Length: 304
Image 1 (cartoon, one colour):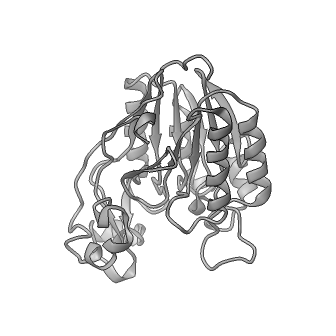
Image 2 (cartoon, one colour):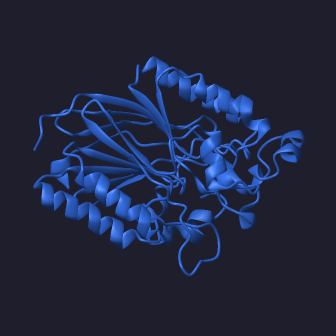
Image 3 (cartoon, helix red, strand yellow):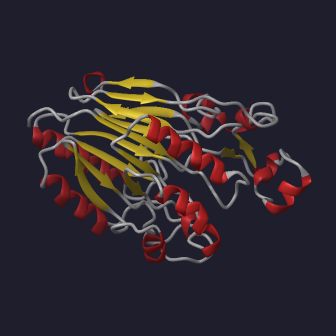
C-alpha cells in the first residue's frame, strides 16, 4: 500500500436538468457558492447538466466561473436534441468522453456510461463497451493510488451493460493490489439517495439536484401556468424545493464523509401520489431512497 493520501474535499452534484427546470441557473449558483464556501479542492457534476446549445451558454458560464478544478461527466440527456457525444464533450471543454486525473494523492476516473449495447436495446444507451473497459483496466493497472470512479449511470441496478465485467475488473484490481484500492463509485441518473457496498466497493448514488422523475402516470402541475407552459416536463416530476448536492471529504484513512442536504417536495410527494406504492419494490430500501435529500454518511473501507 502506498503512503496515505492527503485530505481531499470536493463538491458533487448530479442531474440538474437545466432544460427541464425553470430555475436551473439559481440551483447551479447555489452549488458553486457552496463549493466556494467549503474551499473545495475540486468540483464535479455527474451529467444530465444541459444540452449543448447556444441558449445554454449563460448557464454553462455559471459553472465555468467557479475558480477551482472542475470536472464533467456525460449524462444521457446531455445529448438530447441530436448532439453527439463528441459535440457535447467539446461544448463542455472536457478532456474526452472518459479520462483520469490525480489530485492530492487520489486517482480519479471519469467514465462514459452511454456506450450502446450490441445488439442495441430500446431507450437510452446504458453501459460500457469493451474498448472502454480495456482502457479502464490499463489505467487502473498503471496507478498505485487509491481510486475513485465517477459515472452518470449506476452500475449496481441491473440495467448497466457490461456491469459484470466492470465490477469483476474492480474486484480483480483490489485483489491484485492486496488492499481496497478502488474505494468508491459515484453515480447519478436515477435521482435516488443510497449507498450500496459491493465486494468492498461503495456505490454512492447522488440524488438529482432538482427533481424525481415519475412520468405521465403521475402528472401534477407544480408551478404557475406560465412556468408550466415554458417548461412542460416539470409536471412529470416531483421537484425539490431546494437544490441538492453534497460536499465530500476524503480522509487519509480512506474514509468517506458525505455531507448532504435535505429539502422538501414542491407539492404532493411521490408517496402521496401513489408512486412509491406502485414502484417501491423495485427501488433501494423499498422506495425509501425516493426522497428530497442527500443523506449525510460516514463510509469506511473496513465496513465493506
